[in-house]
Amino acid sequence: MTFGFASSAATSFKGSAGSASRLARLLEPAEWAEAQIPLLRNPREVVSGLHVRHEPAPSTAVVAVLDTEERLVASASFARRPVPADGWEFRNTLLAQLRRVIPHDLRRRSPVRTAVLLYCREGDERWTEEDGAWMWGLRDACTLHGLRCGAYITLTRGGWQVLGEGRGGRRPSSGSRPSGFADLVSGPGTAPLRTASGAAEAMRRTAAR
Image (tube, rainbow, N blue to C red; front, side, top):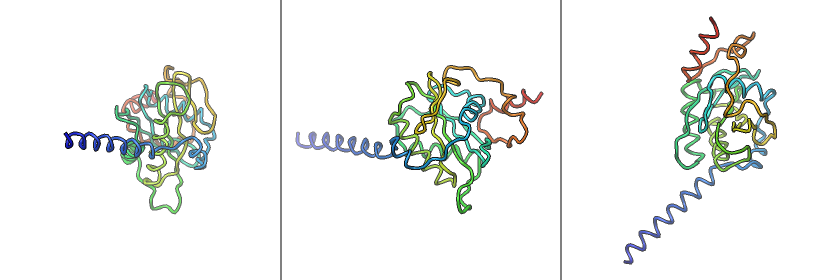
């Protein structure tokens, strides 16, 4: 009986320690604000562009890299696995996606390009622990890939929201249809885009016809 009780207690302690570790790997809004994340000059344009290219559904994340002129250089979308929110796990996933679509900038003295994250989820625009874990993961992934950590944006049924900035809009939303793709890729000075989304490539070919 003593052995059974000790085993149960150890399991309980291990579970508590794991939960505490996950909670430590997240950023609250105040901490995010203190990190001095660079503001997007035109967040609506960035959000609309990512929404058109990737058409994210709930539980889909889109990580994108912007150049100094805030032009989209590379992007990748992926579904969030049904596991507890953990900044370390999110960091590893984001880093893997970044490595797929763009070389690192670790040789530079200071970061030039910026990574932003758009996460489509259920619920409203208020911060959640899941958001905090994505923030932690984005910041750490950017450091390991030689990028500046940029905005974290949520996309819900109510619209989009740049967390920590108070900027947002009703469209696009998680339930809205993307606008015309050609308008986003045919303008002068558009940077060549690397993407992990085959659907976006097909849309680009269609728009070019």
